Length: 82
Image (cartoon, rainbow, N blue to C red):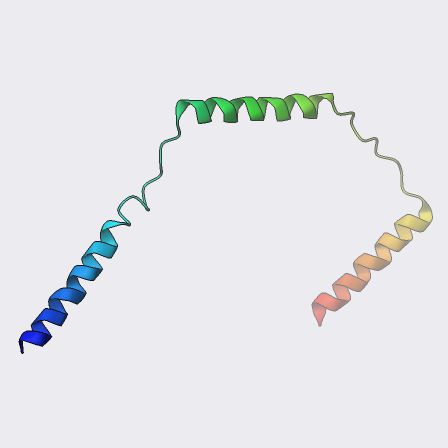
């Protein structure tokens, strides 16, 4: 009987100690000031790079390309219906 109680107490204490390690898992961690500043600078750099990149010029499709696209869409629709 004492052995059963001992095992029960041992198992309950193991579960309790395992749960203590997970207290902060659900809560979001606050970012440090340096991390926030670095993230801001990184994002600003991305926006600067994007603004400097030339825009892609859309060119009209040739009749062959247009027909190929139509056929591909038809084939895809047929496969979806199956």
